[in-house]
Length: 217
Image (cartoon, rainbow, N blue to C red; front, side, top):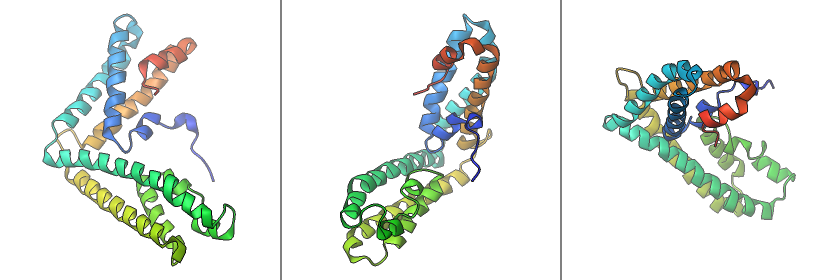
């Protein structure tokens, strides 16, 4: 299987994919740092000039959403929070209980988790949601895991419901400057381009410059 070359992956877009609040945090940090440093390092001014309007648009889109947009923001957080809760159930409750009955590498354990835990914890949001449906089907009619199967089914139903609300809100929430999602992508993509700007103009001090211009944490 071919993998995307990691150096061309936009980490800002990836990290903020499921929460616009993360994009806001990244954008505030980058915009403020660019502004402050460009006062003493004029070479940074072009990067600030092209980024600042995108930052303002993102902030405006976030703070002036109508009721539908507000629901969308909440639903984004809801889906993310649900994943956190379900992942805790998986690691702290379901998996330990399954391992008591079926040790790793046994045929039954492999049948329940044919690809390990990866599909449940990483990847695109819709694929991760469907992975819980697959987990339920893999457990099947195993009486010893009936309680876990019921919990998995509940978690799957909750994730589907939250995702459906988010998707519906996303499809109807538009403004003259585009959806909040488009504003997030525009800002995060420009941050990625500014990484290239730093490499081009501050190559010898790239580690220091990146540490002060981007929220690496």
